[in-house]
Image (cartoon, rainbow, N blue to C red; front, side, top):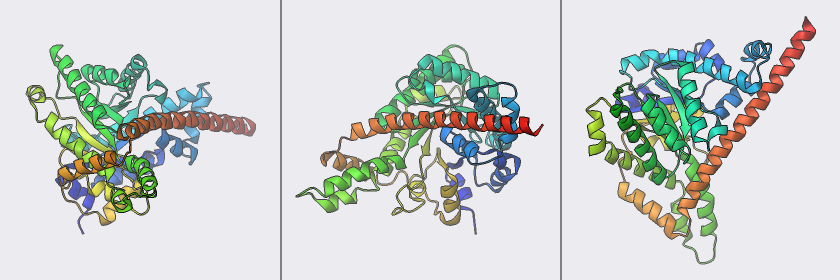
Length: 380
């Protein structure tokens, strides 16, 4: 039986792994997934690193070594993350070369503490890019109002950028404008465009997780058209993403990008993030199946990746039902749900969630490092 994840690639979509842990690198599991064609790239974030460090002992030796050098928790995590990202990037380098730089990337995120700090974000992006020092590394910058100027400046510098935490079409338009602006700045300064790779990470399932309870509340109100309201449940996130893809096709098929493409510029691919089905009533592959299309990436957590490999049905579907997607959003608004506020709240919550995970991560690192150091000192 053919591998559905390999079939995705033939349709123009790259399956990436939304996970990293040191034993995946050292034990050969990640290398085997790459060799099998299951994945062609990898994303990470503070939550993923927190889970990896808190729930395993694979980092203990490195934690102890770094703590013995009197490094604080933030410096220890920085060293651990950079080491993992470098090693993962090396594993994906054959994919990067085989695709002429069109795939095979590994992402590392700027500190969530800087989400509202443009200059701090840009300085951190430059530092991470220089320190990781891999052509197939990407720096993740959130699509906050403060992040947008940093994204444009980083692109102008020639840094590969993964723009994260995009929820609304309005914000996505600003992200694409920042990317094109950065390319234009770089071209004006005489810089090369062909080496730059960027993705726009559009979050999917979190939208349904936010909207479905609001629809259910409306459906239970006296006199409500309960069936019509409940029919919208599980459909809004996919509709939103399909309209984002339509915007992508329009922008990167337009005149402004056409001029940059002549200089070697690449399209900024949409990356579908948050694609696990949070609602058990939904298919475990629903946010993969609906969003298959050329020039896209789907970064999947381990369970979703395994599910798709087992029973995925690859077929280009993202450009289907575009009028229905508009109708779905219009019906949501007509039902009295403040769509713009839902999306704004999701962005705020996303930034807050990553910041909380980061602080929790630093606490875990500090506690484990202290305990390891104390235990080994007693053993000497």
